[in-house]
Amino acid sequence: MKKIKRLFFLLAIMLLSLFLFSCRKKKVETTLSLTEEERSGLTQMMTDYFLEVEGEDEQELEDSINQAYKAKEEVLYNALTNFKNNKKDLGKFQKVENVEVTTEDDSYVINLHAGFEKRELIFHAVIPDGYYQFTELSFNPVYTMQEKLLSAFQNMIVGMGTVFAVLIFIAWIISLFDQVHKWEVRRAEAKKEKDRQALELKKEEKLSTAVETKSIPAVLEKEEGISEELLSIILMAAVKAYEEDLGRKNPFSGARTLENGLIVRSVKRRK
Image (cartoon, rainbow, N blue to C red):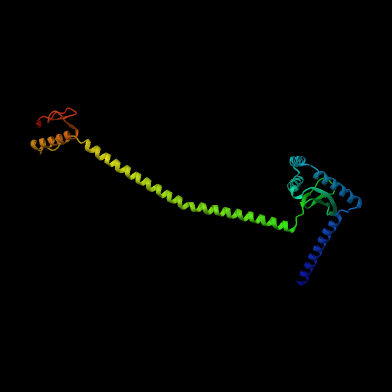
């Protein structure tokens, strides 16, 4: 059993060694060789390209960016846009200091160092074997450590300020909930009071209507046990009250007349 385990262990080590050896061999085979002629050609080509881009004015650079966008060349579009945004930090162009050309796997790596009035710029490009397109392209201004720390501090202040502003705004919104609740309570109480007053007014109107619509013939419809004398007294009292409400005094005599011309005579019950 132990021999079988040892055999499997040795077999695994051999397979791993063969895999690593094949990967290393493949890497060595795909690495490009760089002759002095190729180095010189790439240096001159990238220098000319950089000087052409740097020599464009704002409108020409904007046109190049638009053309890259229409052609869907993302690498070139991002690089030119970055160069346009960093032009103010660079200042006036002075000279190309040096160009470094190296190889990495199956690609050529070019780093061009250019001097500007305010700072140095590193133009970085990666071209695959065949020179058919850029796989990497960037314009990188070189900032000092002090500038980097200052930029990081500014970004931190802006970020923290934004966070605190949002938190203060949220706290203010939450504080308004209490005022909104009080306003809703006052509104509900006012509506309740208004409904109560409307209900009382409606009751008073119903009561007044019931009193006004109560007619004298209703007394006549009562049971037969009421005597004529009592009935006459009730009717006379009702008429007198009616006269006091609707009558007006005659200025030429002590008599009282009614505005509606009602004349009361003797009342007799009909059998």
